[in-house]
Length: 291
Image 1 (spheres, rainbow, N blue to C red):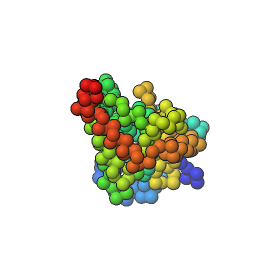
Image 2 (cartoon, rainbow, N blue to C red; image 1 turned 90 degrees about the vertical axis):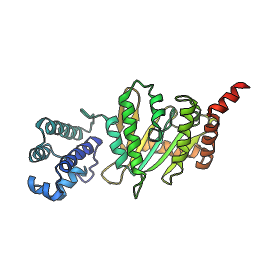
Image 3 (cartoon, rainbow, N blue to C red; image 1 turned 60 degrees about the vertical axis):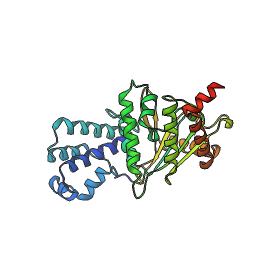
Image 4 (cartoon, rainbow, N blue to C red; image 1 turned 30 degrees about the horizontal axis):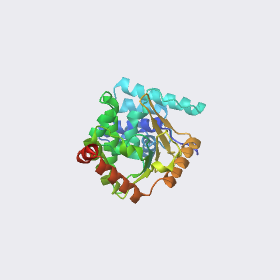
């Protein structure tokens, strides 16, 4: 294994697939390794993507696990592509959709730093808010948002829960997504999740003026393994992508830290969120309209 090996997200997805095959057959690492002629250590490093998975080794696992031919061949093709991409230092993931994979990274991460510009961060969104934001015409994106939210919710009860640091501009609080009732429920939920010790929410106030990464939302994920670099996740209504170049993810980290310095602290942010939730109450809106 190269000393400086860093697994790409494609290689990590391949590792999860290999582990899934073994778990479906209820085999331990030792049992599976014995069947295929691998050591438990080698199989573990393949599943955890701490070394590249050779296409021939994936083929052997597919045969031993009696995986349908078309299924293991698809994974072999991905491994071949990953191998070629690594050799050429060029990575375009064939048949690999970052938006579909994102929830898996949420499960694996230790730290998630998210900056949004128009909406409450995905993992904090209530279903009604998500549906309204997607204009009900994008069921695939709605489902993927739900997967990311569920992945984060599942981590809340962990011994070492995922640490989440979120920053967004004040305009997010005043955007009536789905109407006053949906917006108020969402803001109250945001206050609730902010009380969790692993969650930090900060708001960039209107008065701050221009700020770093303005108009460019991103999510930056960090992981426990040395072989897994930070990954930045970017999403638009057209496509999603992972950024894995360390120089680029470092730019994301610096901008996020600058946003944190510029934003209100947690207590001040919660006060502002509570104020927005109060004003989003339909009764208050009606009273304001009457005057």
